[in-house]
Length: 244
Ligand SMILES: [Zn+2]
Image (cartoon, rainbow, N blue to C red; front, side):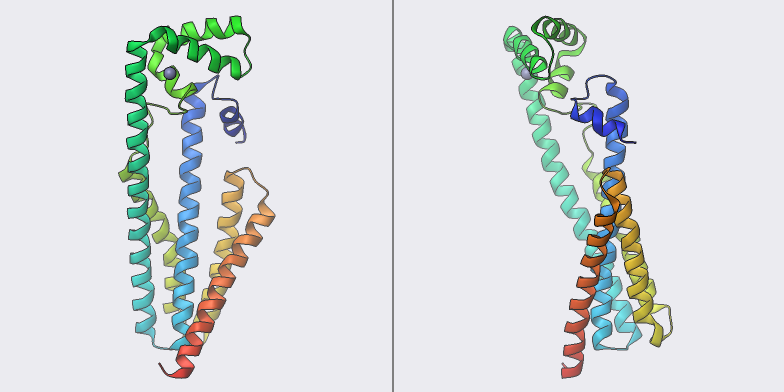
């Protein structure tokens, strides 16, 4: 599972079909875990804050559900906008590259050769490689080596938006259910404990998927969630005590 990262660092030189798709699948998975993480932290913070102020179950349900919907839609919209922008600039870069290849193929061949040299090939091998790549699919070669784009695999903004929406919703459902389902005396404890446990899991997964150390990632993640719940609970309790 660490190999694709390795390949990427070396410029995706050998097995392009493989590391491209595996790499992007890992990125998707990682984005999904982070989306779920957001859903847990923000919804847990929200419902715990409201629970600090009131025992009213329908108020908790309303707050939790509104938080889930607002959060998932805001994540989806944000993702849609950012992926669309990225896709537009990738398309523009590809169009420019296409024009350059048409208008100045010699200069482009030399450019590709130098880029391959920069990656550690000797002049002779780089010239040979650049010539072969150009013959096979010049635009694709420039896209990958020069722009670091896979022209066949531009991210679809709708897919990205849906993925964010769903992953946030899955994460947000946990604290929402935890605050409304258990009996009144238990709801706060159940919500805090289950949310922190889920944050251990998401922290672990995102570290694993990024091939990073899992322990500090879990600790940071749990600390962040605990802080969020602590702060909102204190704010809710103050407001509740003040009778606002
Ligand atoms: Zn070029």
